[in-house]
Image 1 (tube, one colour):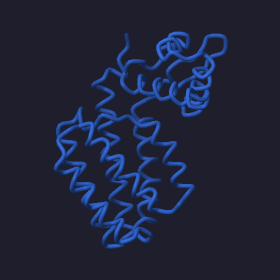
Image 2 (cartoon, one colour; image 1 turned 45 degrees about the vertical axis):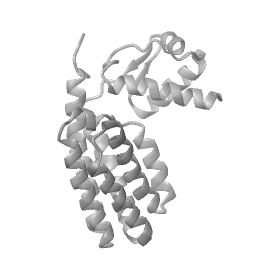
Image 3 (cartoon, one colour; image 1 turned 30 degrees about the vertical axis):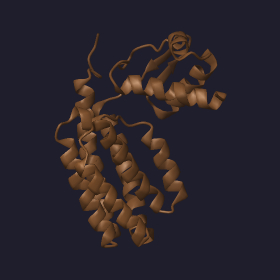
Image 4 (cartoon, one colour; image 1 turned 90 degrees about the vertical axis):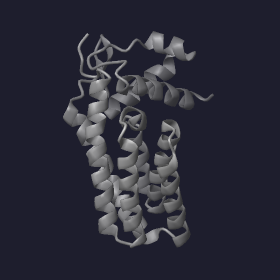
Length: 215
């Protein structure tokens, strides 16, 4: 595996631990331990921490090391709001550019999600649903921004929230209807509301995982 891929692997794992509540705000990140647990050298771990510092989830303190940043509930909400705004722009573009065949496939994907009961598969279908809309925008800059933003949000809603599956499917159907109507405004608004709801659920999920608890 290339050094770039090792850095990505390390960043993904550290990010996962942070948003799973395993590493709480103010906790020092043991670079040696992370490297040993992942079976890699310390260099890609250090590079991963620099990436996470740029994302705002890790803070480097001179002569002390890397610590989990003091993220607030509003920080999490803001992250989702920004994600929703950019995703909404992509949906607005997609309403004009998606082909009829692509819209039909998107509707079929929403149907599959409604009948799915396995949380892991629901997560995958949710990711694919939004990915198709984003790429259907034909807006390379928006897609690039969304790819970066997608790495910084928490997951696991389908397993953690019993009602999320039904709510997400309802939101997805509303988004599909707007796209089928070729209404960019409706599509953008539906996506923004979907992510605003996700923001509150993300905060609730992190609270349940003890993200803001002090040891």
